[in-house]
Length: 391
Image 1 (tube, rainbow, N blue to C red):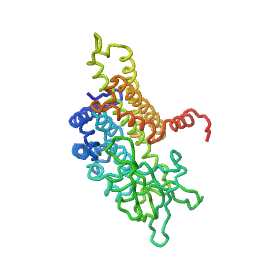
Image 2: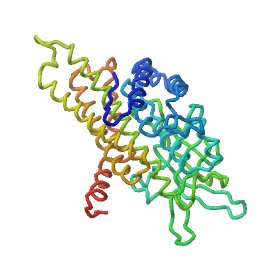
Image 3: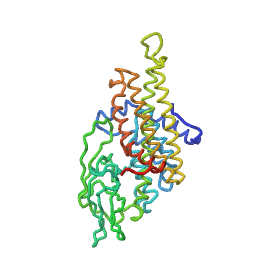
Image 4: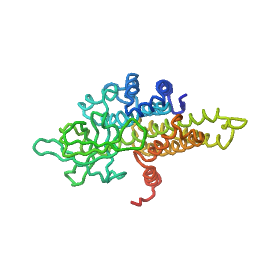
């Protein structure tokens, strides 16, 4: 059953949870595992979620969306994850790319992309991380320069760990342009079509069982028309964080869904596994860690919903702090819940039948991407607590 909190969730949000949970249950972990095993994508679930209006629930009604916000989209991702079939591209396509285009894109960009992102017929990937930059976005070296004769942009650089490039019609690339006044590089966002000349991709061999593949991208003087630039060339940083805050909130939702799924498996096992007189769940050594996992999941959800509500209310500064905290709390709760679930099942926790072992690696991703827990602690210590930087 889906979890909900009436203190932070309207009746509409609670109803959405119920409906998405029902959809996820009809597919379940078995469907997800089969798709991964076959090397395919979750196309059937994606299409049905789109038909029901869940994929674009955060996008403007004027462009085919549901008119909601990140709070609604986070609920969708969390409930699908709790059912064992999370859709990672929800984080990337409607949450990051859709939000950035909806807030800062031209009318032409909105008309071209938002209806397709909302109805599931189009996907967009997001490329920011670079091999030599890591968490330091100020070291991004992907640069865009103007062709003085045509006004086109020429984009050159590399990106790594970009999800779903093979199934996305375009990638929203974070590059840098030179400020004419200061000579310094400033961030800008560009829509790069998948088949653009000079835009290459190489799949990264990952040890994570997921339908979405990870790619390294190369951009070799990729020529883009002037209208490929999203928003104002001088407002790149603002636009960038408009996508990164939803990314953190949605990563929290992804983590919470995974944690709830693992905890549910452990509880089912602890209630029925009988070695001595009573089921093993009667023993405090089993029961108390599972209770702690549940508490940490609930606390992380409260912060996630706070971050989502702040973001949807337009308070970007407060949302940035809350989104980082939510991502941190949810990732920690996820790792602990998955670990305890595996431990509860003992040897069975490592079997393919129960499907928990592969979640050990997936749970670690929540601590690493899209920003490591250490960088979040840096952010909180500097921005929230006012402590000096060491770098």
